[in-house]
Length: 392
Image (cartoon, rainbow, N blue to C red):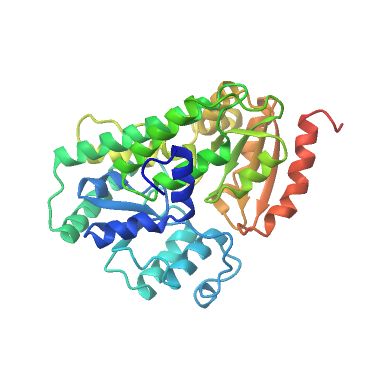
């Protein structure tokens, strides 16, 4: 796509062919490291002139190689990404960082390192609690990661370069938040599926190119006329959606997906990394405490004698109250990939929390692949009719 093309068109083009740009940069001598989970500290890679590239699956490609190593009753997203790697689709990577975001990722990582020939492979432990002791443990893990990156590049990670990298990624976070701010308005000028495609694009290119693309997108959207007025305003919560098809299905049925709580959406962009003091400690706090993901356990303070369920819900999901209020949400769709224990076990509590806010929600479990969309469509259509008042 020519450089002068419109922002949204360029973003969609990059998202359709995510490998193209990094392969060009690889030929120019740049190092590319793959990562899957949003808990990967991409700032440390950027600071050493390594391009972080988010590895995703393919909802259209049936896994054919992964059955040799993983059971079928296993996270279909992880199976898909691993299958693509086994087929050589990620051979352009210099290596990869795998974070212990869930048991499926951890168990796959041990096999991955053994059977896929990466020049560099690093596994990072990530605690499931957020106390000072756990933050210190994770800070030590970041120091180990730093040493391996320095060995890979032959360069020392300096305070100045790391600060500059954090500033660049913080700028990207602010630009993405500006994109979501557009959907606060009624009607929104950009669809939820378009936002997910823009985020898919910026996780496929260097941060400086991603920031430039975001500014182009924001400028273009600012000139758009308002969209259609009618249609329920939907929040989509849950596990990874690395393709816009699910959100497009909701929007094709006449709804507006105005905000999400996804690891491929808002979660990686809603808070900035603080730049004060020890930068690795700042990164440890951000990735362990600030990121909102069910894989990390958070609870309200208690006297040790009894638990307050409502207080725990508010501690874990209080940000959803702000989402619902600010984006004038009419309903929520809670989607979870099959065998995703982190999100699947959380669905009843999230549903309870939305009930406490007076917001109707629909929970859906799916098998990640595109074939599931038609099955889900009927349930989503019925849910939207309820929101429109067409069904008692």
